[in-house]
Amino acid sequence: MSHTLPALGNQASRAQALDLLAARPLVVLTGAGLSTDSGIPDYRGPGAPTRTPMTYQEFIAGPEAQQRYWARSHVGWGRMFRATPNPGHHALATLQAQGRVSLLITQNVDGLHEAAGSATLALHGRVAEVICLGCHEVRARRTFADDLDLLNPGYVAAHLSAASRPDGDVDLEQTDGFVVPRCGCGGAFKPNVVFFGENVPKERVQRAYEAVEELAETDGALLVAGSSLTVMSGLRFVKRAAKLHVPVVIVNRGATRGDEWASLCVDDGCSEFLSALAG
Image (tube, rainbow, N blue to C red; front, side, top):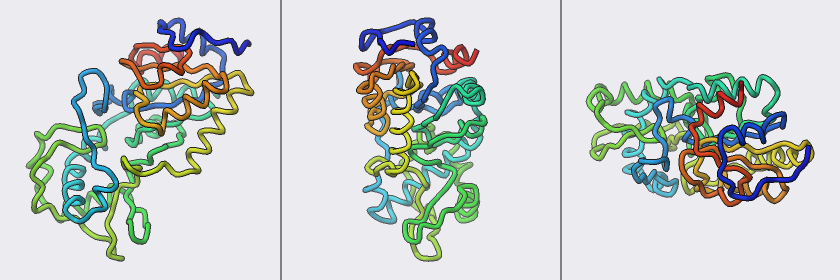
């Protein structure tokens, strides 16, 4: 199979992209757009409102910011916890089981890939865990949520009308009085995910780079599904693939920051495209 690529930035049909990807080993990079069919809103899809998630620097600034974060996150947690994998998640699990996906890299923290049966490299961690910023003890989010319920009885029920946000939190302005437990060491708990303003751990980045580089030796392709590639944590792998002349196919509703490095860009739904790819 030749390494000759279509023109960069080429807008393509679903059929053209499926033809390019056929019989190639794949590395897949997924973003928030993959989970919208599970009821989790995305950041930058068509019609998405402007969102300003809390940064790491804001979170560590003190108890007030942590109270605001955890109040919003606690209300939203139950919604994300109840979300179930959609056809796109199941299609990727099928492709991985077939041996067609050498690595599934996700920017999502919702755990839906894993719930569908996929093994992933979760770049930004998973919202199902919390970590103490003092002693670095990791706890299950379900246990922490139980603690929050005991300390804030009726809080979730009182805010059922709050609108959901992509990170599993909700739009909520008044958070005064919400009680957040501290670790036994005195440290603050934080979701075990990479916040805006934090760096993805180097070992995760290196593993993803290595998987992309292997595609150059195996005549593989990088498939991006449901990511606007606005942040460098995902865009860097598209750039590396393009530099190595590895075909890049981007499937997303709307333009992305990586389109200029793509071989083919397909304006399509992730569930529909991935289901067709899995056959």
